[in-house]
Image 1: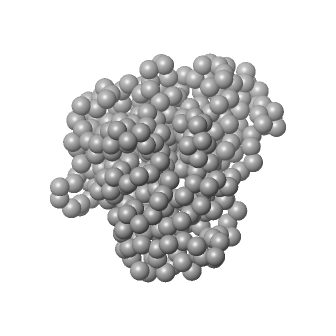
Image 2: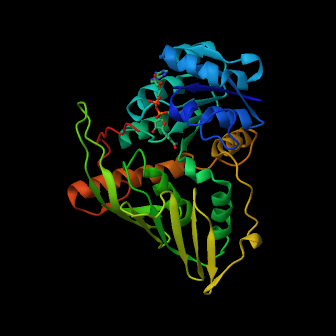
Length: 341
Ligand SMILES: NC(=O)c1ccc[n+]([C@@H]2O[C@H](COP(=O)([O-])OP(=O)(O)OC[C@H]3O[C@@H](n4cnc5c(N)ncnc54)[C@H](O)[C@@H]3O)[C@@H](O)[C@H]2O)c1
């Protein structure tokens, strides 16, 4: 069993689900259901959050076996961990990640947004490379089991050559709609070359940050010739969904929506696609991480993948501010955004 510690006991760590949920949408639930991970320790400076976690999740683990700490550093210094889940808010990611990267661990599961600037993310990635540690960034909607199966079918030519991917999701460019930025790459490839973006809004933020705008739309050109269209203002169309348009057919799919595959004008019977049963996306990620630690392939949304997604996110903002199409990698790596999701 791989030993996991969670830093930050908020919504995504524990509060979106309870141990009764069949498909928990939180780290504690995924770690609990994954048969290769055990939750050994958690850290949160809020005594209320600790108490809440203890009463909700404690009984869900053998003998209430979890150790509780106030800070990330206390937990990292006291426990021998294999995997650390970083579940604090975006502006705290950089500092916490520096602490985590100093510890003797094997993998990090980092919540989106990866960081508040490209420079922060570059530094984290270089630190992980130096220690040969894998970072996986949590673009959770990626790991719907049916989406992973569709990703593989499309890669193998289900609808011919992918020409366009339209992804739907509004909200903060880096801390919310980035799930759909990842989903566009999931089907178009993780090799973006340029981005033209449109954004709106922002608000007041503490110095020295700039506000995080909401996405209106973005066009992403990929190395393989595919074009991604990120639709921020999508009316009643569900978020976290995509239309994948290929030379021989199309796929409409989403994390919360049904799957429709068309080929040559005919709708394909979904029973021929061998789509897997539903599962907690967190259970799926933790299994991918431990399979990797056993010598398997890199988990999805690891280094090169999250780098590509992050470049698109920051380039969307850069493009909207400068009025230019941004060639990747983005030259301005210092723009510091208050991505507080
Ligand atoms: N993947 C998803 O679908 C999804 C959904 C919601 C949030 N998130 C992401 O998860 C992260 C956390 O968001 P949230 O809404 O759960 O936050 P939250 O505000 O509910 O909880 C964060 C917790 O971290 C604790 N904390 C902060 N610094 C700490 C430190 N150094 N040591 C220990 N504890 C510390 C705080 O006390 C707080 O309880 C953000 O990056 C957010 O974008 C992801």
